[in-house]
Image (cartoon, rainbow, N blue to C red; front, side, top):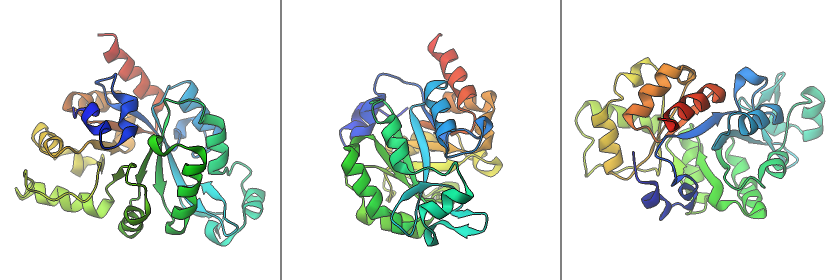
Length: 261
């Protein structure tokens, strides 16, 4: 596993995880088995029951300048970025703002947030919120869409690491298969991340991970396969750095079983 002490010299967020050699525990949208994703209920359970290290949060902006948490950007056919918070909460009473999450959890100083930016127009306001809560050293950024990801790279604070988009990771995967991933490879991002599916699982081996680690890049995984404790153990043994799961409770049990060894 990559040295978190070394990583923290570039990105202070990793200083939160120096004391452990196990993968960092990430809760994907809170954890869907507990209820509706991206809600206070699921985030509370991820924090209080699964003792998660990272809350993964999907970010959109309403047209009246609120940052809200939602994956698809559409609620009952209504576009979030074309509606007001009041209008949206009449449709979805569980829709919450980023301010609500941070107000609740910022006092837990060990907790980190992964902001998955779904809306490029939300970037400036999100950065203002980060400054207001003084949590620059507790944020990891990502955007699966390459256009949004590139815009995020331009605007973000340099101390906040950013995870690669899907298009970039597909290229890295192809380059690895063709033998082009070596010590001279030029990476665009601070963190690399795969959706763990059958085709990506097939290339996840010690050689690939060692190659990525030699470049000083941590590797994160997300995907429904990570709900399985056997798959979790396989990824732990491979030396994956961050695991985002929809079953934070199972991942916590798996990590705890390693801690007791």
